[in-house]
Amino acid sequence: MNRRTLLLGGASLAALGALAFTTGGHDGNLLVGMADAQEADPTAIADMTIGAEDAPVEMIEYASFTCPHCANFHATVWPQLKADYIDTGKVRFVYREVYFDRFGLWASMIARCGGEMRFFGITEELYDQQRNWTASGDPATIAQELQTIGKTAGLSEEDVTACMSDAQNAQNLVAWFEQNAEEDGIRSTPSFLIDGELHSNMSYEDLKEILDERIAAAG
Image (cartoon, rainbow, N blue to C red; front, top):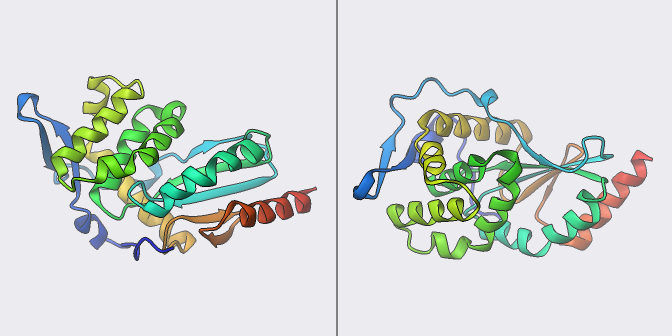
């Protein structure tokens, strides 16, 4: 169930490599450091949400785009959760990224590049294709694969390049992740906060039981 222990505190930024990526003309993908970025500001990052704002239950998922268990959750549980609870106005769903590695950070930057309107669609593609874009382990190849996913989702080459070369945003995202994970006691992915109560990965049947209890309690 556990992907691995989360990296918290200032050391995690260095452990992630503190890297964003960009495209350098015919030279391909170049890794760039964030030494010139300003001090990180976690408040600059917005939650990505879906579902009615006045839904009786709030569910927050903490997940990593490079986590196989998260990909499995989105393949097997997410479609039913969305159809039965989110689309029907019963649950307001919040997705918060966790970064175990720079590739998960890059994927997050791609997903967020199109704003909230495209975020969940790109998220589904990232999980559907996770084995493909992570397979090589080569940073340049992974960068190209992620850019392709972004462009397939309707982002322009200029959009992708601008988003993925935004070192300040990358630094803000890492600080935002660290703050959220520490405040909510997140130690593995996927993890879920349902009306403030922390739960680990589970089947749809177990999740349904918890959500139904919460909805009933909310009247």
